[in-house]
Length: 231
Ligand code: V0D
Image (cartoon, rainbow, N blue to C red):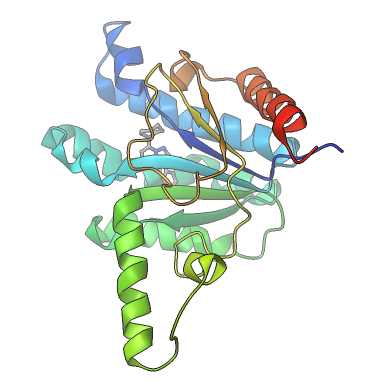
């Protein structure tokens, strides 16, 4: 039986280092990285992946220098100004997980309008993890469950009940997690969701990560699944 990769998650690491290596500013690396988001989203859509979750901004990223954080905040707007027409044509649907409320109002508006505009699209779900932390997500779920217990809506929950309180509720399980640029850590990305995912670490930096690299990672997933899957 051929298992298919429905949900791919990527930690898009190495943008700053990629820029520094060519004596450019880190912000240039981020801009190149955002262009690559477009390329890989189009490739994933063509490959019939259902969900692509991209780690765009972690709860740790606020510790970066102020100028860099400010630059990152304008990237969603730059991205949509350039690519929203193309995303619409391709039927790509935008989603976001994480706490958007800490972003500048304009960044929130731009993102919410892209989510609204693409909500009926039937192709790839392009899910941005923004100001996202895996532990934060779990704690929020626990608090919502406590609220529902107090309201008498819940008395005990199982794994699938717990999952319905996560920000990824309703999405298929993560099959494959890729981290670019050499580090071999999860870094507080999808903690619960990665329980059974294949993990692929590559030395390629995010701006250089191409469709062929995505296909290669999917083949690693399919081979491991054939060997270790339930016979
Ligand atoms: C910087 C590499 C696209 C990672 C990719 C707010 C670091 C480029 C977006 C984006 C970032 C986010 C939401 C959205 C549309 C586009 C983005 C951030 C950083 C942080 F709806 N690239 N990108 N957002 N980088």
